[in-house]
Length: 411
Image (cartoon, rainbow, N blue to C red; front, top):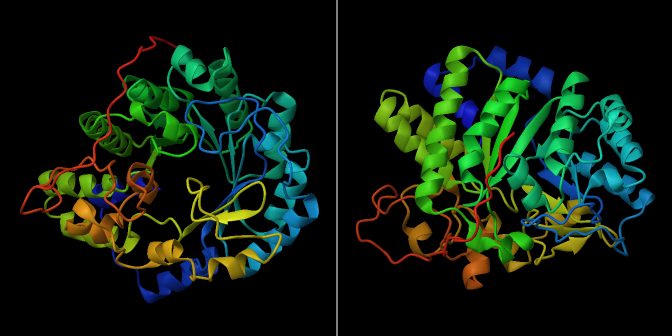
């Protein structure tokens, strides 16, 4: 995840260097630096929807072999001991798991920064009260466009109204909520209206997710936006993020699944904030880009551990057989070892890129789905050869854009 607003703040009001006393105060308040990865945990694969871009290919059926309650609790304790700071509970639809609130209460008791990822369609007043009582630090709900388009993507009439109502219910109960938007060529025109919606409704976070070729997202990868559309989207979120900052509005914008976004922002800073671009570049290098297999991990519903949620084809081990902490430190798997390597041994345009230290080679799963090689160039990189510092132009892996029906819609 690329915290766009965080870096825009550096451009608008650069932070002063922290003193030793300030650093000590931060550790006292927030604890030591992260030691384990952020863990996204698909507790259940069952879902009441069958969304077009679902990476887990979920359905409204029970999937055998899922972790039982005690196995989940045992793994929670191991994650805490290992230093995992953030836990994101996902699915399927996690609210379909009968013990979701017991698991969540235990996670909060252990001190995780706890997030819930849901489609929102099951959140009525009773469910909203239960969610608020747990004290989740953040609840993300996906909105894939305005009403008609969202319902088509989610394959359920009325899904947009239900998800929007869920966001409002949680907001009214002082739960921090955010809208997640996965952009394709079908819905790219809804990007700015959805940011408008967040500001009008007081939803404090907006997450622009680029399409990843995994699960049904891989089957529908022809719908991935063309590079020009992705650049337009970045221009929009940068402009909207800056406007919110200057106006003092409470809106955080983040992007995900395309680490080239950081390099795009750097070029923007060089053009518009030249005096601050060097400091931004240093901060982006410290961030380091794609974190799959390094600072991000996934546990699926069966207990299999993956480098992140889009890597379900590649399993590193299973928490039923050995602890997550042991699996995550075992680099005998060559792909896993390659993900952890810095710099990664990526090829093509990625390997020749002058900004590899910033993006980390971008999203490896797209490269794998297109070529069978997890370390080939990422075909989702929308930057020009000039922008990535190539002296000689190289051929590119391309993805044909979707040319099907566009669904008109309005709120």
